[in-house]
Image (cartoon, rainbow, N blue to C red; front, side, top):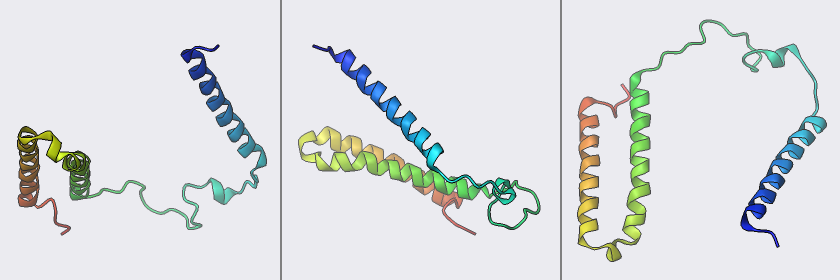
Amino acid sequence: MMNAFAVVFVFTLLAVAFAAVTLLAAKVLRPSVPDARKTTTYECGIPATGSTEVKLNIRFHAFALLFVLFDAEVLFVYPWAVSARDLGTFALAEMGVFLAVLALGLAFAWRKGALTWE
């Protein structure tokens, strides 16, 4: 009988073989029609003009980071809310501190104007 490591090894080999066979089949079966337009930087058909470097305002990045921050907050708050009755008063206090820190961060970002698009 095979031990646990042998089973993991067999499944790893099967996964690698499946990936290799799938990639090889895709390469063999796909249509290959090379064209000069396909090798350009942009495939829209319009020649590129100007610089490819675009300078974005830092507010876009700050807004995206705030979104990620408050999206991650939901990942912490939802499981806590599901089992809040079983966790007790200490967990309630911890979540209160966690939400207070996030509220302070939101107030700071709001005051600095990170949430405006102007």
